[in-house]
Amino acid sequence: MQSELNELQTELDMMDMRDIRSSESKEAPHDWVEFKRCGESELRRMQLVHEIRSLMSEYRQALLSESRITSLPTPDRRTLEAFRWQLWKGTPWMSGSKCALGGNGRYIYDDHNALVALKVPDQHDRMSQFAENHLGHLFKDRSTPRHDGDSKVAFVSERSIAKFVSYFSTTLAAALLFGAILILYNVKSPNAKLGLVTLFTVLFAASAGLLTNARRAEVFGTTAAYAAVLVVFDDRLVPIRIGRNFTFTGHAPNVAMDSR
Image (cartoon, rainbow, N blue to C red; front, side, top):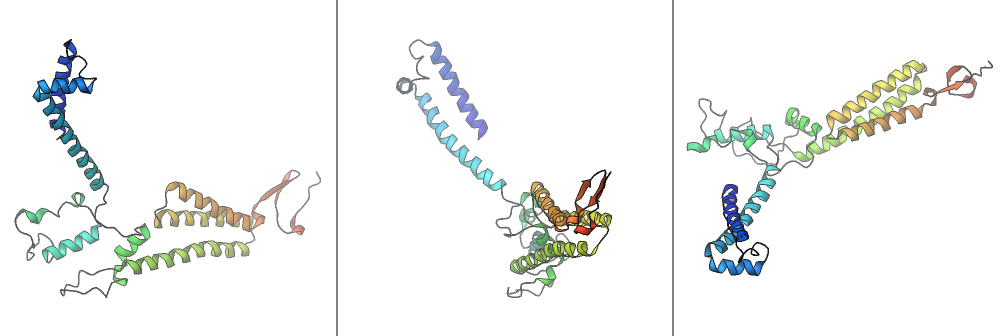
């Protein structure tokens, strides 16, 4: 289509160049009235205009359709494997398996990258993917009727996975925050406190980066806020210079003065 449009445009440009060299019709490329008058005498020129208009409209619609199609995600691999299993009534291309489609239709679903998913789960973060791929047997949707006795294919409840991920994320966040606060409260050594703050900060950053779909800037921001909460909680972590020596703030009796 693009090549066809280019050929029509080239032919029209050649006519325009010829009109520019002609003293009678040199205004045709710039004046619609003159262009229409010249087109009435040259039927091919007006035919080119209408063909280009029609083809441009079709070409733009094709571009928009292709753009929407390419934005669709590829299907989940486990979902595609289950679909292929149902389609072949077993492992594809293995002895004893027979595809429900005949002829070249058997090859339609072989290329994963050539397929698109019309619908994806609303919450498809990494934790949800992990629960679906490795803990799917715990979230089977028993309300969905089964039409065969194949035990290797089952439906997973997205609502149950979403609830599990929500509860797990809330529990993990609370454990990383309040657990760190309790441990830091009972540790007296400043060096140990600094090491624990570093450890909990790394754990929090890892959980935010690996278990969620948070972007890099969001991970940095939440990790910095988490570390600030831990440091501010126990003010004995903040060094203050008094004289020539460093000491850690804390209760009033622990603050020493240097008279030098």
